[in-house]
Length: 155
Image (cartoon, rainbow, N blue to C red; front, side):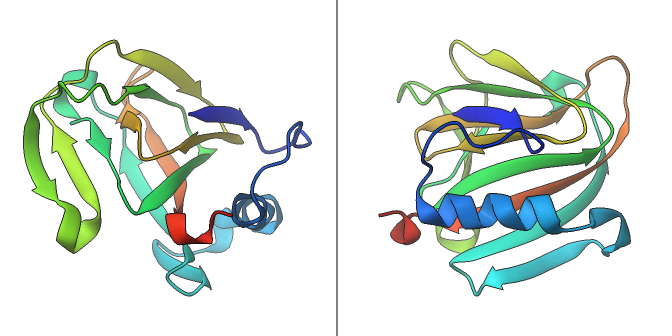
């Protein structure tokens, strides 16, 4: 997992596909876009614009993806994203790998918290379990953008 703020310059050399995804986040006005999917480079890199309300941590299931990297970007509001390395000991709640490239777990071991404010992003790789959209101070309406980067694009 890598976190940062979109206004800061990249301090390390991200793979080209992640650089392109971050450039999309830096140059797009998300307040003007409807909820839904935006193809950036077909299904290799695409974004999901999502409006939702944060919920208590225990109401959100931890998740992992195997074919895509998630770049979770917060455009407005505040949230906490729980995260931890996938230890292999997490009990599967639901597997939708074939349909949606997602596995939900009941819980995750050794969960840490990433506090997200507008402009924050987290990059979650297949080995990173994450639990997005958790309440920070109180339930809050948020707009987040999840950019999906296919692992096949990482060189």
